[in-house]
Each structure stands twice: as C-alpha cells, then as structure tokens.
Length: 104
Image (cartoon, rainbow, N blue to C red; front, top):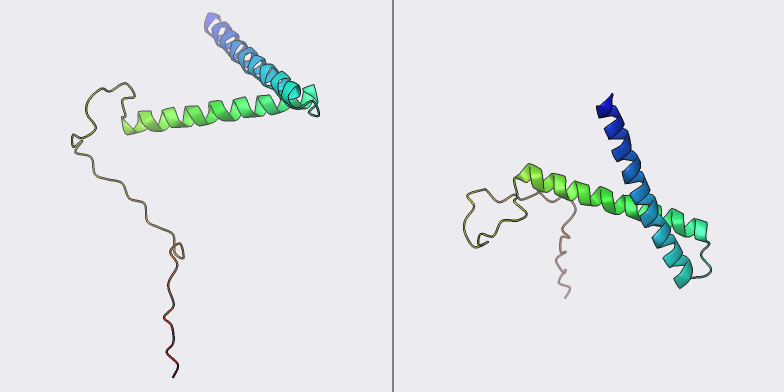
C-alpha cells in the first residue's frame, strides 16, 4: 500500500510541476503577446513542456541504450572500437543528373 501511495504522490508532484511550468509559460506568452488569451497560453505552455520532456527522455533513453556516458571526461580522439553506423539513403533521395544532349 505504501508503494502505491508513493507512486501516486510522485505522479501528482510531476503533474503539478508540469502545470506550474505551463502556467509560467502561459503568463509569459500573454505578457509578450496580449492577443494570446491566458487559457490558450497555458495550453500552449503545457504542450511545449510535455513535448520538451518527451524529447529529453527519448534522448536520455537513446544515450543509455548506446552505452554513452554523459559525464565521460576521456578524449574524443581515442578509437572506441565500435563500428561506425551508417544508414542507407532511401531510393530517390539523391538526384540524378541528366546528360545534356548535344545538338548540332
């Protein structure tokens, strides 16, 4: 029971944090652009803060899956021994040049 309560408290704390950021961004938008209503500004603030948190989590998850140490102080010049990843280009991505026809 205590674990569920702790998870719910953490969830509501994170929701309050997101809402506080959204209200600050909403009032900032309304202050900069008075034509933007406060409710619309808060909604835009909520969307932008959720999108920022989502992309930050995706970047951190990708770094953790690749085994990247974000606080590594070693030189970047050293060979890591990992192969370089190259993604193939989709067909039609590069433009083919047409040869000019010689007339005359």
